[in-house]
Length: 197
Length: 204
Image (cartoon, rainbow over all chains, first blue to last red):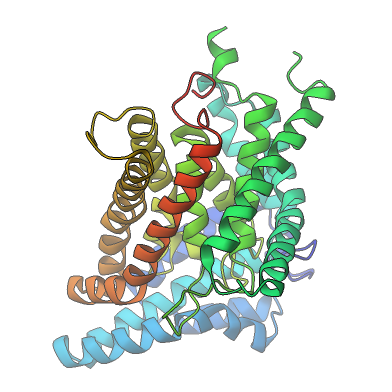
């Protein structure tokens, strides 16, 4: 669930120490190569996971959500355009997801957010203030457990009333409480001078 | 004053943050059950539709972008505890997620134009007008726009348009139609209670 580290796996490998910017550029290059030579890329991808010392179980978990799509695609493409092309398509899917996941596994959420904020900085010209963006992201992270609580308590209340399976009985109270939470949060922000410049 | 008006006010900031968090919370375990359907559907796209229908185009799209930025940064906020940049870049269904902000924007635009006026639904009673408006908005933005981007991206990744269409329709369409209906009903109830929510003078 939403731990403080997110999906990050702590470590000291060169991949962990590389700053997110260059790592993302490296990912772009690696993706181009992996899509070009899908069958030769498997070895290097496994080697990179070994270099980052990602446990095997965790490495497999990155591509597990793809099994269904890979199976359907593999079978369909083997029948329609032959097994060679099917193997290329499925392995390029799997390896490209594995490569992108490796960046996430070896980069702290805070470092990645800083990099994204850096990329967003030129947006100041169209009126998007970096400070506001940082505040928005931090507020949202704080609000996730809050909203999970709202969802959980409304769900329990509706189950107790025997309305647990009715989506409307769940969603309407959740939305009312969500909007009320937003109003309270907005007032708290205004009271703390967020709108003063 | 021009830049000032484009900056988010505290009340807008709060709504965007809370709805981005709602989209995340709807992806956590404890799925939504739909009567008559044995399969629990993930409610995350419901959050995207609700953001567009209840916050309007600009704030709704911002809530979705905020949510996706946190996913990209590596927080496991997607349904099933998934997260990280792979789901927005290399995964076969990345196109659907990348289309969400535009979907919320279109839902907001249609809602903002349809709710305050009866121009497009002459003669309908108020509740039916609100439901029809909500349904057109959620199907237009939440399904047509999202699929128009999601399916071609999927097709490119699996090298088969047929497969992408079949999988998109079989896997997502039934649930998305139900979620469009739920959003339309919820938005109708909420807009009756709070008429100025979108498209009013206090919006944008």
